[in-house]
Length: 166
Image (cartoon, rainbow, N blue to C red; front, side, top):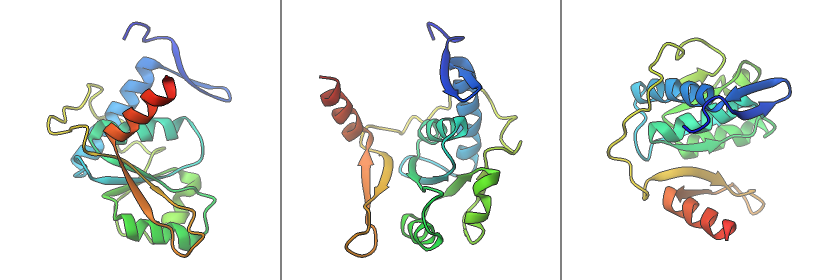
C-alpha cells in the first residue's frame, strides 16, 4: 500500500506492480469464491513458472483456499493421482499445460482466458478464515510407493517463516 506502483514481480520482460498483482489476484480470488472455494478447499495449480503462477497462488490464498502445486513436468499418471487424492475444487492452468488436465473431473480455469478478468479488484472478504485453515498441500516424492499429501496450515507457514527470519 505504501508503494503500489513499485515492481512486485518480474519474469523476463514482464513486470507487475504491487497494485497490478493485487488487482489480478483479487479478480481471480472473487472468481474462485464464485466457483465454491472457501476455507480448507483445495485448488490445484498446474502452470509453468510465470507471473500467472504468482497471481494464481496469491488468488487461491485470498479466496481462502489451499493450493496444491502440480509440476507440469510430472508424469501424467502422477498428476492424475495427485488430482484424485487431493480432490481439488478447481484446477488453475495455462494454455501450455491445459492438455495435461484433459481428464480432470473438476473445473479447469485457464489463467490466460478472460473468464475471471471482469471480477472485482477489491480484496475478497473471507471472514471465516483463520490461521488453522489449510494454506497448501505438498506431496512427498513417492520414493516408497505413491506420494503422500501433507497438509500445511497458515499458522505452520507463519511459524516457519518467523523462525527462518530469525
